[in-house]
Amino acid sequence: MIQNKKGNDEFSIDEIQMSKGFQALDGRLSINPRYDRTGSHVSDVIFGYDDTKSGTNVQIVASLDEQSIRVMRRVGDKDAIAPTVSTSGRVLFEWLHDLNDEGDAVITTVEPNQCVNVQWTDGPWTANVRAPLNRRIQMDQVEVSIKRKMDLSQEDISNMLFPDNDEDEEGTQSEESEVVEEAFDILSSMESESVVPEMPKKKGFGRFF
Image 1 (cartoon, one colour):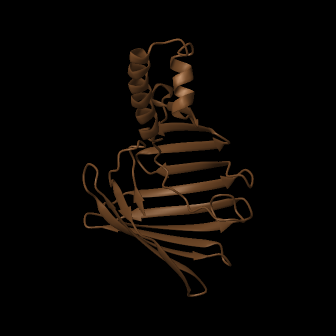
Image 2: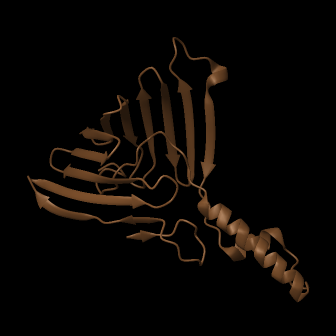
Image 3: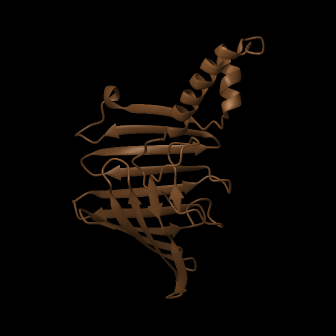
């Protein structure tokens, strides 16, 4: 897979990755090497094991600088727990609660002596509440963010920025087109930030299994 993160018509190889999966050990094994050419040029490989019978998912992410292992175990029909340990000493504990079969969920992540993060996904809306873990939680240190996914085309952006552009002259339309393309590139490059690692999407348990 070759991805173009710029989201425009220019061809640029930003990320290269391959994925291979096969049945083994009463479950499914997968391997996913990745190479990111942007910024730090990080390369790593993801090893995964998914046992649908027991509801267990294991993910190992390994690079030259750091390795981590994450074990997710289903508890009941709508809940799962997932500790993560890395060679850098970072430890995460996750509790995942599936709200429905459409991917809506509440994910609580605790990083000891660092922070607690609650992520609530409801359709296109995502709310994040993050609080540092000191001796006590102070309200002025709590961070809250709410985001909504929007699928916008260049035509949609053009109509919002220039609603009366039908009568414009050709030169003005050319300038407006450049503005629209620049705005589209900026919006396409925006990515949501979260302290929660990405979860595998499988049928039968929302987006967790």
